[in-house]
Image (cartoon, rainbow, N blue to C red; front, side, top):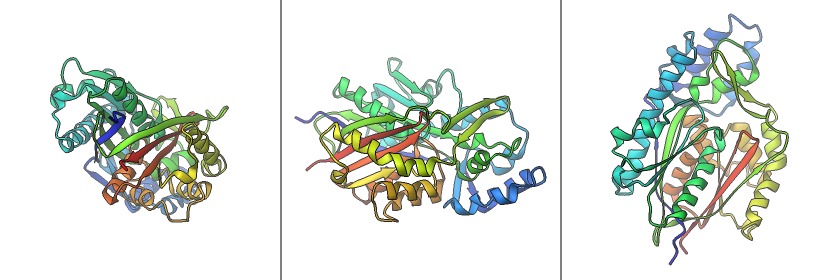
Length: 350
């Protein structure tokens, strides 16, 4: 009997406000251009980002107001809780399960501070049992969707048959800042969107997609490549311009090392499902992984429709791959603060 961790269902959710990229560029111009002479040169990223639209928990004009921690946190708690409920409910319905059947909840989120954490705040509305185990995880950033999947699968295997619910929810737009002009801030304003994805994971003798392996690689002395800076106004984004070339140079050996632990090589992978951090990152990953340019088509489509939502984004990519037909071996991979690469392999039944 194969009682490895299986992906039972996957669902996604986005908030109601649609931000067209041209509208965001215009709003950013209104907010920045009168304050900073160099804005027009930096604003080219809005056109080169590969993004058509994104979704946000607030309408675009809200972000142009003076905002501090209280306003941003209130928007995070309201928006993230609703996204959690929407995505989790859809994933449970797809698995034909009730929320009261969930034994463990793994919540991934790095774009707001919530204590009690999100799953506790929505427990009554969802109908979780009082004895459900809660595993909130903060700080994994864009790698959180893959790392969270790995954590959830190991928890499922520790108690075969139990129901593990993974929810990755991010409200990245709350990092939009008009009080400073930096390259990282402009890039964040051009890239970030809000969204959530939920998975039901269970170790049982059934299911079509089994977790075959997972692993991480963290490069030493790379803390300044990606992350948050804590400011009085809110989170300040840390994005190093060297991310695409770093990925192109270093990601392939890291992935090869993770696969080697299971006796595999990159050529054994039928489809790489990558976190689409940006258009340049996608192109760099194709070069690094020796893929034909344009082959990461689902990644580009998700980026165009939703932007970079941090942790759930790679699960949006996986959702599209599932709908198209999951190949024999799919390797999910994402890079995040640390600086870390996280991988997880899904294997379909022979």
